[in-house]
Length: 164
Image (cartoon, rainbow, N blue to C red; front, side, top):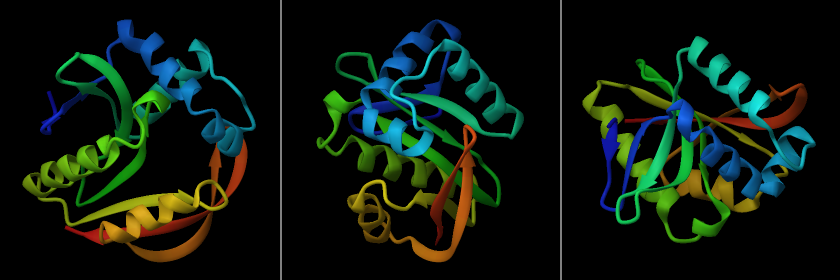
């Protein structure tokens, strides 16, 4: 286990859990359409994505609800002097229950214990107006406007950082 919160724990994704991870991605249809122009992802896409993240030094993790032991989300992040939080995604059925905030706060504490100086995130514009507000409320500052390329699609985004 990498980290634990009141209601969840975060650990590495195992091969036998990939079907659950695909379900989480596919429950976030608006995200997929905005970020990749796809309605669904498949096993080949997911295996390639996890492999690329690992090669880039990221932890690809599951978020598990402790009460039910159900995988309710996923996250990708690196641990270095400047940690990069690439993704936190909660299954659509579990949204609006503060799981994302709880997991983020647990991650921030974990990174502080591991002597991280900054957390970086890149937030895609024109996806969800609440996402930027969430990160501002959690102490992030806008650094610069940028372009991201995810799964072959170029996206307008904002690079944000927080000193921890």
